[in-house]
Length: 502
Image 1: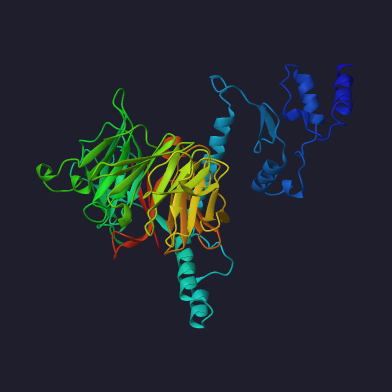
Image 2: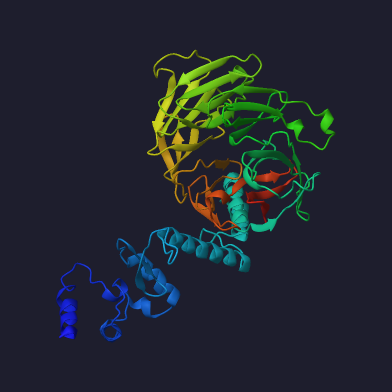
Protein backbone atom coordinates (compact mmCIF):
# COMPACT_ATOMS: atom_id res chain seq x y z
CA UNK A 1 0.00 0.00 0.00
CA UNK A 2 2.75 2.38 0.93
CA UNK A 3 4.69 1.54 -2.20
CA UNK A 4 1.67 2.29 -4.43
CA UNK A 5 1.06 5.56 -2.61
CA UNK A 6 4.58 6.81 -3.38
CA UNK A 7 4.32 5.65 -6.97
CA UNK A 8 1.09 7.55 -7.34
CA UNK A 9 2.62 10.70 -5.96
CA UNK A 10 5.56 10.33 -8.31
CA UNK A 11 3.33 9.74 -11.30
CA UNK A 12 0.64 12.34 -10.74
CA UNK A 13 2.31 14.87 -8.43
CA UNK A 14 5.21 15.82 -10.70
CA UNK A 15 4.25 14.97 -14.27
CA UNK A 16 2.07 18.06 -14.81
CA UNK A 17 4.75 20.53 -13.77
CA UNK A 18 6.40 22.80 -16.34
CA UNK A 19 9.83 21.36 -15.44
CA UNK A 20 10.11 17.69 -14.48
CA UNK A 21 12.52 17.66 -11.54
CA UNK A 22 14.03 14.51 -10.16
CA UNK A 23 12.62 14.10 -6.60
CA UNK A 24 15.76 12.37 -5.38
CA UNK A 25 17.83 15.55 -5.57
CA UNK A 26 15.85 17.64 -3.08
CA UNK A 27 13.79 15.23 -0.97
CA UNK A 28 14.54 14.89 2.69
CA UNK A 29 16.41 11.71 3.67
CA UNK A 30 14.07 8.94 4.80
CA UNK A 31 14.66 6.70 7.79
CA UNK A 32 12.89 3.88 6.01
CA UNK A 33 15.85 2.19 4.33
CA UNK A 34 13.66 -0.19 2.37
CA UNK A 35 11.51 2.57 0.89
CA UNK A 36 14.50 4.80 0.16
CA UNK A 37 16.44 2.09 -1.66
CA UNK A 38 13.32 1.16 -3.58
CA UNK A 39 12.83 4.74 -4.69
CA UNK A 40 16.46 5.13 -5.79
CA UNK A 41 16.16 2.06 -7.96
CA UNK A 42 13.08 3.40 -9.72
CA UNK A 43 14.35 6.96 -10.28
CA UNK A 44 16.11 7.78 -13.54
CA UNK A 45 19.85 8.40 -13.29
CA UNK A 46 20.21 10.90 -16.15
CA UNK A 47 20.73 14.56 -15.18
CA UNK A 48 17.97 17.13 -15.45
CA UNK A 49 17.69 18.49 -19.01
CA UNK A 50 20.88 16.63 -19.89
CA UNK A 51 21.82 16.45 -23.54
CA UNK A 52 23.88 13.89 -25.41
CA UNK A 53 27.12 15.41 -24.02
CA UNK A 54 26.20 14.44 -20.44
CA UNK A 55 27.24 10.86 -20.95
CA UNK A 56 30.73 11.76 -22.14
CA UNK A 57 33.44 13.75 -20.47
CA UNK A 58 32.59 14.43 -16.79
CA UNK A 59 33.92 17.99 -16.98
CA UNK A 60 31.77 18.83 -19.99
CA UNK A 61 28.83 17.17 -18.24
CA UNK A 62 29.29 19.43 -15.22
CA UNK A 63 29.45 22.53 -17.38
CA UNK A 64 26.27 21.52 -19.18
CA UNK A 65 24.41 20.90 -15.96
CA UNK A 66 25.54 24.18 -14.40
CA UNK A 67 24.16 26.10 -17.35
CA UNK A 68 20.72 24.45 -17.54
CA UNK A 69 19.81 23.17 -14.08
CA UNK A 70 17.33 25.61 -12.46
CA UNK A 71 17.87 27.10 -9.03
CA UNK A 72 15.56 26.07 -6.21
CA UNK A 73 15.06 28.34 -3.17
CA UNK A 74 16.89 26.89 -0.20
CA UNK A 75 18.85 24.35 -2.30
CA UNK A 76 21.99 24.25 -4.40
CA UNK A 77 22.94 21.85 -7.18
CA UNK A 78 26.21 19.91 -6.90
CA UNK A 79 27.32 19.02 -10.43
CA UNK A 80 29.83 16.45 -9.18
CA UNK A 81 27.26 14.47 -7.18
CA UNK A 82 24.47 15.27 -9.65
CA UNK A 83 21.89 16.22 -7.04
CA UNK A 84 20.46 19.08 -4.95
CA UNK A 85 21.49 19.80 -1.36
CA UNK A 86 19.72 21.91 1.23
CA UNK A 87 21.36 25.22 2.16
CA UNK A 88 21.73 25.87 5.87
CA UNK A 89 22.23 29.13 7.84
CA UNK A 90 25.80 30.41 8.04
CA UNK A 91 25.91 30.04 11.83
CA UNK A 92 25.22 26.29 11.68
CA UNK A 93 28.35 24.65 13.07
CA UNK A 94 27.34 21.07 12.42
CA UNK A 95 26.88 21.36 8.67
CA UNK A 96 28.06 24.83 7.55
CA UNK A 97 26.84 24.52 3.97
CA UNK A 98 26.05 28.08 2.90
CA UNK A 99 25.72 29.88 -0.39
CA UNK A 100 28.82 31.95 0.39
CA UNK A 101 30.97 28.89 1.08
CA UNK A 102 29.76 27.24 -2.13
CA UNK A 103 30.56 30.34 -4.19
CA UNK A 104 34.00 30.66 -2.57
CA UNK A 105 34.77 27.00 -3.31
CA UNK A 106 33.78 27.43 -6.96
CA UNK A 107 35.85 30.63 -7.32
CA UNK A 108 38.88 29.02 -5.72
CA UNK A 109 38.67 25.98 -8.03
CA UNK A 110 38.49 28.30 -11.04
CA UNK A 111 41.47 30.35 -9.82
CA UNK A 112 43.63 27.29 -9.22
CA UNK A 113 42.72 25.89 -12.64
CA UNK A 114 43.69 29.15 -14.39
CA UNK A 115 46.97 29.32 -12.46
CA UNK A 116 47.77 25.75 -13.48
CA UNK A 117 47.04 26.52 -17.12
CA UNK A 118 49.33 29.55 -17.02
CA UNK A 119 52.15 27.48 -15.53
CA UNK A 120 51.87 24.72 -18.13
CA UNK A 121 51.63 26.74 -21.30
CA UNK A 122 52.03 30.24 -22.63
CA UNK A 123 48.94 32.31 -23.00
CA UNK A 124 47.32 32.01 -26.42
CA UNK A 125 46.38 35.08 -28.37
CA UNK A 126 42.79 36.23 -28.12
CA UNK A 127 42.52 37.06 -31.82
CA UNK A 128 42.50 34.35 -34.45
CA UNK A 129 45.57 34.39 -36.70
CA UNK A 130 47.38 37.06 -34.72
CA UNK A 131 51.11 36.29 -34.44
CA UNK A 132 54.38 38.19 -34.67
CA UNK A 133 55.41 36.88 -38.10
CA UNK A 134 52.05 37.80 -39.62
CA UNK A 135 52.21 41.29 -38.14
CA UNK A 136 55.73 41.86 -39.41
CA UNK A 137 54.77 40.68 -42.89
CA UNK A 138 51.76 43.01 -43.03
CA UNK A 139 53.88 45.89 -41.78
CA UNK A 140 56.49 45.33 -44.49
CA UNK A 141 53.79 45.17 -47.15
CA UNK A 142 52.32 48.45 -45.94
CA UNK A 143 49.03 46.87 -44.84
CA UNK A 144 49.45 48.09 -41.27
CA UNK A 145 50.18 51.60 -40.06
CA UNK A 146 52.87 52.07 -37.44
CA UNK A 147 50.22 52.85 -34.81
CA UNK A 148 48.22 49.69 -35.51
CA UNK A 149 51.39 47.60 -35.67
CA UNK A 150 52.59 48.81 -32.24
CA UNK A 151 49.16 48.29 -30.72
CA UNK A 152 48.89 44.70 -31.95
CA UNK A 153 52.45 43.94 -30.84
CA UNK A 154 51.54 45.09 -27.35
CA UNK A 155 48.52 42.78 -27.43
CA UNK A 156 50.80 39.85 -28.23
CA UNK A 157 53.19 40.78 -25.44
CA UNK A 158 50.38 41.14 -22.90
CA UNK A 159 49.15 37.63 -23.65
CA UNK A 160 52.64 36.20 -23.17
CA UNK A 161 53.44 37.85 -19.83
CA UNK A 162 54.75 35.44 -17.19
CA UNK A 163 54.56 35.99 -13.42
CA UNK A 164 57.74 36.33 -11.34
CA UNK A 165 58.02 37.29 -7.68
CA UNK A 166 60.01 40.40 -6.78
CA UNK A 167 62.41 40.47 -3.85
CA UNK A 168 61.88 43.56 -1.69
CA UNK A 169 64.86 44.97 0.24
CA UNK A 170 64.57 47.58 2.97
CA UNK A 171 67.14 49.38 5.16
CA UNK A 172 65.02 48.22 8.08
CA UNK A 173 64.92 44.43 7.74
CA UNK A 174 61.98 44.22 10.16
CA UNK A 175 59.81 46.29 7.83
CA UNK A 176 60.01 44.56 4.45
CA UNK A 177 57.27 42.06 3.80
CA UNK A 178 55.53 42.37 7.16
CA UNK A 179 52.34 44.23 6.18
CA UNK A 180 49.75 43.74 3.45
CA UNK A 181 49.78 46.05 0.44
CA UNK A 182 46.62 48.12 0.09
CA UNK A 183 47.47 50.68 -2.62
CA UNK A 184 50.36 51.18 -5.02
CA UNK A 185 50.57 54.33 -7.20
CA UNK A 186 53.34 55.02 -9.72
CA UNK A 187 54.73 58.46 -10.53
CA UNK A 188 54.58 59.80 -14.09
CA UNK A 189 57.98 58.38 -15.06
CA UNK A 190 57.23 55.02 -13.36
CA UNK A 191 60.53 55.28 -11.49
CA UNK A 192 58.95 55.10 -8.03
CA UNK A 193 55.91 53.43 -6.52
CA UNK A 194 54.19 54.96 -3.51
CA UNK A 195 52.76 52.21 -1.30
CA UNK A 196 50.10 52.15 1.38
CA UNK A 197 50.24 49.11 3.66
CA UNK A 198 47.73 47.98 6.26
CA UNK A 199 49.11 47.41 9.74
CA UNK A 200 47.79 44.87 12.19
CA UNK A 201 46.77 47.28 14.95
CA UNK A 202 44.83 49.52 12.53
CA UNK A 203 45.66 52.43 10.26
CA UNK A 204 48.19 52.47 7.45
CA UNK A 205 51.92 52.72 6.85
CA UNK A 206 53.46 54.45 3.85
CA UNK A 207 56.57 53.90 1.80
CA UNK A 208 58.20 54.40 -1.60
CA UNK A 209 59.62 51.61 -3.74
CA UNK A 210 62.48 52.53 -6.08
CA UNK A 211 62.20 50.55 -9.33
CA UNK A 212 65.68 51.32 -10.64
CA UNK A 213 66.87 47.83 -9.66
CA UNK A 214 64.08 46.13 -11.58
CA UNK A 215 65.82 44.44 -14.50
CA UNK A 216 65.34 41.51 -16.80
CA UNK A 217 67.74 39.30 -14.88
CA UNK A 218 67.42 40.40 -11.25
CA UNK A 219 64.02 41.26 -9.81
CA UNK A 220 64.90 43.31 -6.74
CA UNK A 221 63.59 46.66 -5.52
CA UNK A 222 64.39 48.96 -2.61
CA UNK A 223 61.60 50.02 -0.26
CA UNK A 224 61.94 53.01 2.09
CA UNK A 225 59.45 53.65 4.88
CA UNK A 226 58.74 56.63 7.07
CA UNK A 227 57.60 55.12 10.33
CA UNK A 228 56.38 58.46 11.73
CA UNK A 229 53.10 58.31 9.80
CA UNK A 230 51.51 55.07 10.98
CA UNK A 231 48.18 55.66 12.72
CA UNK A 232 45.88 56.95 9.98
CA UNK A 233 43.84 55.12 7.39
CA UNK A 234 44.24 56.32 3.79
CA UNK A 235 41.13 56.81 1.66
CA UNK A 236 42.85 58.25 -1.41
CA UNK A 237 46.37 59.09 -2.62
CA UNK A 238 47.98 60.79 -5.63
CA UNK A 239 51.34 62.24 -6.65
CA UNK A 240 51.74 66.05 -6.52
CA UNK A 241 54.15 68.30 -8.45
CA UNK A 242 54.88 71.28 -6.21
CA UNK A 243 58.60 72.12 -6.47
CA UNK A 244 59.33 69.72 -9.34
CA UNK A 245 57.49 66.83 -11.08
CA UNK A 246 56.17 64.32 -8.54
CA UNK A 247 57.97 66.06 -5.68
CA UNK A 248 55.24 65.33 -3.12
CA UNK A 249 52.51 62.87 -2.27
CA UNK A 250 48.95 63.96 -1.43
CA UNK A 251 47.12 61.79 1.11
CA UNK A 252 43.51 61.91 2.31
CA UNK A 253 43.44 60.52 5.86
CA UNK A 254 40.47 59.48 7.96
CA UNK A 255 39.98 60.84 11.44
CA UNK A 256 40.64 58.85 14.61
CA UNK A 257 38.25 59.16 17.54
CA UNK A 258 37.90 62.91 18.20
CA UNK A 259 40.60 63.84 15.68
CA UNK A 260 39.15 65.08 12.35
CA UNK A 261 40.31 63.86 8.98
CA UNK A 262 42.93 65.75 7.00
CA UNK A 263 44.63 66.12 3.63
CA UNK A 264 48.42 65.93 4.01
CA UNK A 265 51.04 66.93 1.48
CA UNK A 266 54.28 65.02 2.13
CA UNK A 267 57.65 65.56 0.41
CA UNK A 268 58.76 62.40 -1.36
CA UNK A 269 62.21 62.98 0.16
CA UNK A 270 60.77 61.79 3.46
CA UNK A 271 61.13 58.30 2.04
CA UNK A 272 64.78 58.03 1.12
CA UNK A 273 67.99 56.29 2.15
CA UNK A 274 69.58 59.49 3.46
CA UNK A 275 70.11 60.31 7.11
CA UNK A 276 66.70 60.64 8.79
CA UNK A 277 67.88 63.84 10.48
CA UNK A 278 68.29 65.50 7.08
CA UNK A 279 64.75 64.81 5.95
CA UNK A 280 62.35 67.76 5.80
CA UNK A 281 59.20 67.76 7.86
CA UNK A 282 55.64 67.56 6.59
CA UNK A 283 54.93 70.49 4.29
CA UNK A 284 51.30 71.12 5.17
CA UNK A 285 48.16 69.50 6.46
CA UNK A 286 44.56 70.70 6.02
CA UNK A 287 41.77 69.60 8.35
CA UNK A 288 38.76 68.32 6.42
CA UNK A 289 35.87 65.97 6.92
CA UNK A 290 36.05 62.47 5.46
CA UNK A 291 37.46 62.70 1.93
CA UNK A 292 36.65 60.00 -0.61
CA UNK A 293 38.97 61.18 -3.38
CA UNK A 294 41.71 63.66 -4.23
CA UNK A 295 43.45 65.07 -7.30
CA UNK A 296 46.38 67.41 -8.04
CA UNK A 297 46.12 70.13 -10.69
CA UNK A 298 48.91 70.39 -13.30
CA UNK A 299 47.36 73.26 -15.25
CA UNK A 300 49.25 76.60 -14.86
CA UNK A 301 45.97 78.52 -14.60
CA UNK A 302 45.25 76.76 -11.28
CA UNK A 303 48.82 76.33 -10.08
CA UNK A 304 49.58 74.72 -6.70
CA UNK A 305 45.99 73.58 -6.23
CA UNK A 306 44.52 70.25 -5.23
CA UNK A 307 40.97 69.01 -4.87
CA UNK A 308 39.28 66.72 -2.38
CA UNK A 309 35.96 65.01 -2.95
CA UNK A 310 33.92 65.11 0.25
CA UNK A 311 30.41 64.27 1.34
CA UNK A 312 28.13 66.38 -0.88
CA UNK A 313 30.78 68.93 -1.77
CA UNK A 314 34.04 69.51 -3.62
CA UNK A 315 36.85 71.44 -1.95
CA UNK A 316 39.59 73.07 -4.09
CA UNK A 317 42.57 74.30 -2.01
CA UNK A 318 45.59 76.41 -2.94
CA UNK A 319 48.60 74.99 -1.09
CA UNK A 320 50.60 78.24 -1.06
CA UNK A 321 47.90 80.76 -0.14
CA UNK A 322 45.54 78.44 1.70
CA UNK A 323 42.57 79.84 -0.26
CA UNK A 324 39.62 77.45 -0.59
CA UNK A 325 36.69 77.14 -2.94
CA UNK A 326 33.69 75.00 -2.06
CA UNK A 327 31.27 73.58 -4.62
CA UNK A 328 28.14 71.92 -3.29
CA UNK A 329 26.98 68.65 -4.84
CA UNK A 330 23.98 66.41 -4.39
CA UNK A 331 26.06 63.30 -3.66
CA UNK A 332 29.39 62.05 -2.34
CA UNK A 333 32.30 62.59 -4.75
CA UNK A 334 34.16 59.26 -5.11
CA UNK A 335 36.48 60.01 -8.07
CA UNK A 336 38.30 63.10 -9.38
CA UNK A 337 40.79 64.17 -12.03
CA UNK A 338 42.04 67.53 -13.29
CA UNK A 339 42.48 68.26 -16.98
CA UNK A 340 45.91 69.53 -18.04
CA UNK A 341 44.98 71.59 -21.11
CA UNK A 342 42.16 73.46 -19.38
CA UNK A 343 41.53 74.29 -15.68
CA UNK A 344 38.65 71.81 -15.50
CA UNK A 345 38.01 69.34 -12.68
CA UNK A 346 36.03 66.18 -13.48
CA UNK A 347 34.09 64.45 -10.71
CA UNK A 348 32.32 61.10 -10.34
CA UNK A 349 29.60 60.76 -7.69
CA UNK A 350 27.90 58.05 -5.68
CA UNK A 351 24.65 58.96 -7.43
CA UNK A 352 26.19 58.00 -10.81
CA UNK A 353 26.57 61.61 -11.97
CA UNK A 354 29.76 62.77 -13.72
CA UNK A 355 30.26 66.53 -14.02
CA UNK A 356 33.03 69.07 -14.60
CA UNK A 357 33.92 72.32 -12.82
CA UNK A 358 35.88 75.30 -14.13
CA UNK A 359 38.02 76.08 -11.07
CA UNK A 360 38.68 79.66 -12.23
CA UNK A 361 35.11 80.74 -11.55
CA UNK A 362 33.74 81.69 -8.19
CA UNK A 363 31.48 79.22 -6.52
CA UNK A 364 27.80 80.07 -6.77
CA UNK A 365 24.64 78.59 -5.40
CA UNK A 366 22.74 76.21 -7.60
CA UNK A 367 24.02 73.93 -10.33
CA UNK A 368 24.99 76.55 -12.95
CA UNK A 369 28.73 75.97 -12.45
CA UNK A 370 28.52 72.40 -13.78
CA UNK A 371 29.88 72.60 -17.32
CA UNK A 372 29.36 68.98 -18.47
CA UNK A 373 26.94 66.44 -16.99
CA UNK A 374 26.13 62.82 -17.79
CA UNK A 375 25.17 59.77 -15.75
CA UNK A 376 25.93 56.14 -14.98
CA UNK A 377 23.30 53.82 -13.51
CA UNK A 378 25.44 53.15 -10.43
CA UNK A 379 28.02 54.88 -8.22
CA UNK A 380 31.06 56.07 -10.22
CA UNK A 381 34.25 54.79 -8.57
CA UNK A 382 36.99 55.84 -11.02
CA UNK A 383 37.44 58.28 -13.91
CA UNK A 384 40.40 58.74 -16.30
CA UNK A 385 40.84 61.42 -18.96
CA UNK A 386 42.47 60.41 -22.22
CA UNK A 387 45.41 62.48 -23.48
CA UNK A 388 43.46 64.59 -25.98
CA UNK A 389 40.95 65.30 -23.18
CA UNK A 390 38.03 64.74 -25.53
CA UNK A 391 37.23 61.36 -23.97
CA UNK A 392 36.76 60.18 -20.40
CA UNK A 393 36.81 56.61 -19.09
CA UNK A 394 34.55 55.84 -16.12
CA UNK A 395 33.86 52.73 -14.01
CA UNK A 396 30.98 52.18 -11.59
CA UNK A 397 29.83 49.81 -8.86
CA UNK A 398 27.75 47.79 -11.30
CA UNK A 399 30.95 46.60 -12.99
CA UNK A 400 30.43 48.75 -16.10
CA UNK A 401 33.33 50.57 -17.75
CA UNK A 402 32.33 53.18 -20.34
CA UNK A 403 34.20 55.55 -22.64
CA UNK A 404 32.43 58.92 -22.95
CA UNK A 405 32.84 61.55 -25.64
CA UNK A 406 32.93 64.82 -23.69
CA UNK A 407 31.98 66.87 -26.75
CA UNK A 408 28.63 65.11 -27.15
CA UNK A 409 28.23 63.66 -23.60
CA UNK A 410 27.54 60.24 -25.14
CA UNK A 411 28.94 56.79 -24.41
CA UNK A 412 30.93 55.55 -27.41
CA UNK A 413 32.37 52.27 -26.05
CA UNK A 414 31.79 49.83 -23.23
CA UNK A 415 34.38 47.41 -21.82
CA UNK A 416 32.71 44.23 -20.55
CA UNK A 417 33.90 41.67 -18.01
CA UNK A 418 34.78 43.90 -15.05
CA UNK A 419 33.39 42.77 -11.67
CA UNK A 420 32.40 45.21 -8.95
CA UNK A 421 29.53 45.44 -6.49
CA UNK A 422 30.48 47.98 -3.83
CA UNK A 423 34.25 48.68 -3.84
CA UNK A 424 36.09 51.83 -5.00
CA UNK A 425 38.45 50.31 -7.57
CA UNK A 426 40.75 52.31 -9.91
CA UNK A 427 41.16 52.22 -13.69
CA UNK A 428 44.57 52.27 -15.40
CA UNK A 429 44.72 53.69 -18.94
CA UNK A 430 47.89 53.28 -21.03
CA UNK A 431 47.27 55.03 -24.33
CA UNK A 432 50.78 54.51 -25.69
CA UNK A 433 50.27 50.74 -25.47
CA UNK A 434 46.56 50.98 -26.28
CA UNK A 435 45.54 49.12 -23.12
CA UNK A 436 43.03 49.46 -20.28
CA UNK A 437 43.67 47.59 -17.01
CA UNK A 438 41.36 47.10 -14.03
CA UNK A 439 41.24 44.78 -11.02
CA UNK A 440 37.81 43.46 -10.12
CA UNK A 441 36.30 42.70 -6.76
CA UNK A 442 36.72 39.02 -7.67
CA UNK A 443 40.53 39.65 -7.53
CA UNK A 444 41.01 39.07 -11.29
CA UNK A 445 43.11 41.56 -13.26
CA UNK A 446 41.65 42.21 -16.71
CA UNK A 447 43.27 43.92 -19.67
CA UNK A 448 41.29 45.30 -22.63
CA UNK A 449 42.19 46.83 -25.97
CA UNK A 450 41.41 50.54 -25.85
CA UNK A 451 40.54 50.70 -29.53
CA UNK A 452 37.86 48.00 -29.85
CA UNK A 453 37.12 47.12 -26.17
CA UNK A 454 38.24 43.52 -26.73
CA UNK A 455 39.12 41.64 -23.52
CA UNK A 456 42.71 40.53 -24.09
CA UNK A 457 43.60 38.72 -20.88
CA UNK A 458 42.26 37.76 -17.46
CA UNK A 459 44.95 37.21 -14.80
CA UNK A 460 44.05 35.29 -11.61
CA UNK A 461 45.47 36.40 -8.29
CA UNK A 462 48.35 34.33 -6.84
CA UNK A 463 46.49 34.37 -3.50
CA UNK A 464 42.98 33.10 -2.65
CA UNK A 465 40.26 35.66 -3.35
CA UNK A 466 39.02 37.70 -0.39
CA UNK A 467 37.92 41.23 0.44
CA UNK A 468 41.28 42.09 2.00
CA UNK A 469 43.35 40.54 -0.82
CA UNK A 470 42.24 42.57 -3.88
CA UNK A 471 45.43 43.20 -5.90
CA UNK A 472 46.70 46.69 -6.66
CA UNK A 473 48.46 47.02 -10.03
CA UNK A 474 50.63 49.34 -12.13
CA UNK A 475 51.22 48.81 -15.85
CA UNK A 476 53.88 50.52 -17.96
CA UNK A 477 56.23 49.81 -20.86
CA UNK A 478 58.99 51.61 -18.88
CA UNK A 479 58.96 50.34 -15.30
CA UNK A 480 61.98 51.89 -13.63
CA UNK A 481 62.41 54.86 -15.97
CA UNK A 482 63.04 55.50 -19.67
CA UNK A 483 65.24 52.40 -19.96
CA UNK A 484 63.15 50.28 -17.63
CA UNK A 485 61.52 46.94 -18.29
CA UNK A 486 57.94 46.72 -19.56
CA UNK A 487 55.21 44.81 -17.82
CA UNK A 488 52.69 44.71 -15.00
CA UNK A 489 53.39 45.14 -11.29
CA UNK A 490 50.93 43.42 -8.94
CA UNK A 491 50.90 43.94 -5.17
CA UNK A 492 48.77 41.48 -3.19
CA UNK A 493 49.00 40.56 0.48
CA UNK A 494 52.69 40.96 1.42
CA UNK A 495 54.06 40.09 -2.02
CA UNK A 496 55.00 42.05 -5.13
CA UNK A 497 54.96 40.37 -8.56
CA UNK A 498 56.23 41.36 -11.98
CA UNK A 499 54.47 40.16 -15.14
CA UNK A 500 57.15 40.75 -17.77
CA UNK A 501 57.03 40.65 -21.54
CA UNK A 502 58.68 37.61 -23.14
